[in-house]
Length: 439
Image (cartoon, rainbow, N blue to C red; front, side):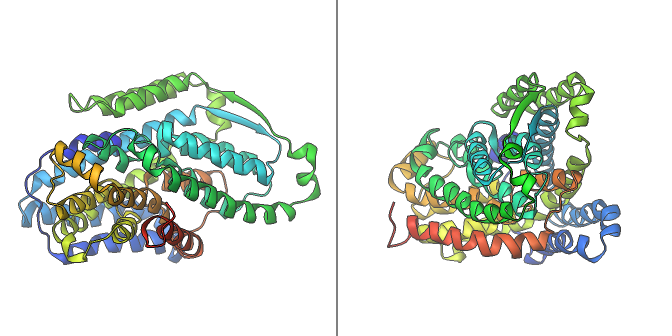
């Protein structure tokens, strides 16, 4: 997504006004992802790519033939290629780094690990931190790992942790390119980051302590629970640095993606085979994400275009509304363009233009609490579904490849995100955007 920013920011003509009924393919794809594995897992595993392609083709055909807007779909195609270049390269490079863990982690050690992951996400992005840490996370809890271990890893490392710098999550980088100062997110969002990260880690500790007490005595034994660490494949840190540098390259077009692919190829062929084997490395997880997101990128276009043109009808006139609306849609749409859409709506309220750097300076200086609301909504609520943020599905796929039971799309939302995240995010809203705010 970072690499797609030049395309997102490029002038592509006026936003089109699609028929609301064209949002249906997107809804159908979400429903298929949620129910397909439950209704007929075998069929879904063999045909999910056909479903994604078919629904995406409907939307693409509508834009090309009915709206005569092939350029719009070409832009989306470039965004998709850039997205896969980033996700895929980070997946390959992180797969060449093996963090060997011996012993069983205690609840306290798990909490420290999640905190480290949340901090690291701001330096290498939520995708980089997730791909680097999910395998050791699984190994250090191998004797008692359950679905909530994977879910809270997604909550904290893959999403909430990355709101301190523009590198942390794509929406914040979009804001940086539009004129938001680089250190603004750290200066204005650190309180919310602290509340969210430490609050979720505290909830996780309660779950994990109960789980740890049910573990067999040898697992709870102090000697067994003492971890030892060893890292192999450290040369891949150089390739990781190349990917992160490529994120910031916008000219010439295609150079960024080419460098990412080169880093992935270099990493794959220079990593010793035993390291890949120790990581149980396969291309299956990235293949699944690549196919599903073909459909997601295509079918979400009408939803985003319609929202951008009709956002004023939502009655967005307060920080609280910007937080909830941005968050709700970031949970099911790509959070980078969703962030831009609501940022444009917020600036428009004050007769400011998203395309004018001077206007952005004015907006940040005079209305930054609205920007905080939009930023937190986009980053935090990406954890609401598996498709809310790029690394979510990757973590799920890697966990399943490691034979770890993960929640289905519906279970993830109804059993974990809805009862845990929504009340917690409501608390954040009260603390930061209500009349009773404490920050």
